[in-house]
Length: 87
Image 1 (cartoon, helix red, strand yellow):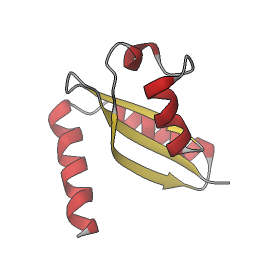
Image 2 (cartoon, helix red, strand yellow; image 1 turned 90 degrees about the vertical axis):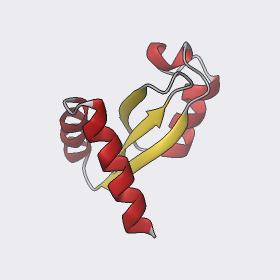
Image 3 (cartoon, one colour; image 1 turned 180 degrees about the vertical axis):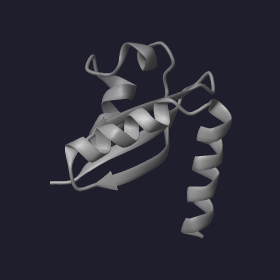
Image 4 (cartoon, one colour; image 1 turned 30 degrees about the horizontal axis):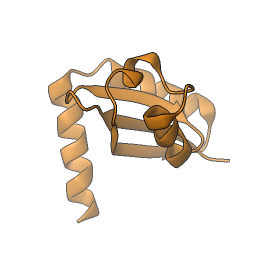
């Protein structure tokens, strides 16, 4: 099983970071279900801006904590850098 961290952009342009085993399902929950985080419920719709894959839950949660400590500018730079790698 794989685990992921993800960064969402909310409708107010704020960023939200989370961890999950199914990114697609979790983004859908953030946008529609009661299971979405309280923070994102008030800021729908959200868009997936970045995700990273990990082999273990522990590794994904560690990276999630690292990203949550980043400033907004650092998170945006991470997103931009990842997009460049995909090109």
